[in-house]
Length: 537
Image 1 (cartoon, rainbow, N blue to C red):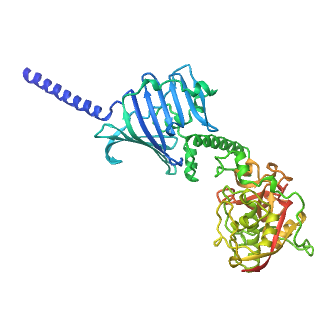
Image 2 (image 1 turned 30 degrees about the horizontal axis):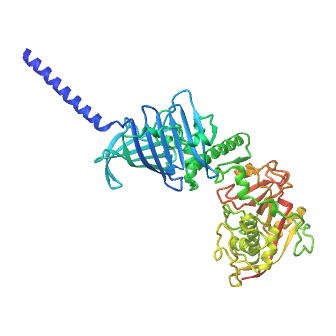
Image 3 (image 1 turned 90 degrees about the vertical axis):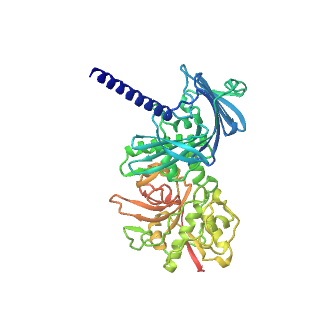
């Protein structure tokens, strides 16, 4: 009996040893260790960057040394334990900045720690047999997924992929992929030295680690880590929604900084306002200056003298009874909202809208007239660089007519005038400027009006809904052309506003429109013009 017990214990021991060996080998197979010293050539594929980015990395983890070349050496970051140097081009000349710390700086390890990863299967990647490793974590309703593909035959990395999903609305923010094309466990120590440029063209010392090393910080954000700088899902969701792409990582991070600043401005504004709201739109990655320079009309093209009508109103119109509110949108005289993109030709969109209103008056049909025709053929204006609505009406009278958008579509840039009489759909007989005191009457009797206003504020830039407070604009400055499409005129009640159609797309404002308070009008009534058509094509 005693021998049986001893034998039984021995059997349990061997079973335990056998199971332990299985677990050990399973652990070895599923959690291999990378070399502390390595060289790798990788290519970054990002949905928000227009080009693929070649990156060369030499690393010595033990000594905390690293050299990263981006874009085949156009930018280089060198980590020397407590100091990191960044060499890049500025005005075609190499310059250097650095950041130093009292403690060792964290280098960028582009070989993931697979301790938390699970081996989930096999695949073929770039023609290579690969084991698949997977890991996911959820942070603030964002599910972050990591995939790693390991070459079975050559025992080296093939691909790392990061993706994120908003589990609240199931929106996918895109996939960021690193393809490895070499992995060598030997590095020349002479690479880890202060770059020569930093001795001759030193620029400045950075005060913050996270305002420095834009490229390396972006790389670091793609890998799972307990203390990593979190990936900006709000920004990348924005990029996906608007199909934004940038030239390189540097611009991507610059735009992210701008986006964060604009987001903060919008959030702070909305906390203190109830009747008017701002929101993220396609302009959220632009500085205020970029917005003004690209979307507004240069002051050079703003009329500096009173517009001379080609024909004056022959009789007063103020004796008529007007409705308390009016919307030419509801009455069918306004075409779909267009997007001028980065063409500074709001003046042409405004003129086209006014012509469309008159065409509706004459035929009962809504036509979509060519903005590009006006941009190209208004010879005294400057196309996408700027123009005047009053001058455009004069030029279109001289041109003899205007074509439909379907015949002469919008390009987003200025081109040669391609108008011919055989594509004419309508022509202008004369145009008239309206006295500010007769704005409502003219809008009711003559239809949508071409107008100018001040649209330079950040509040208009990010306007989303509600009645726009005119304290955020100037009455004596105009820099944008739009279409006056209606009004609400009960002065004793709220709302009391103008309805105005912009050319910034349906995403901006209230489906492309703004309700602008009439307690001061941002210059809306300063230059109101309507055309009268001569003949129809």
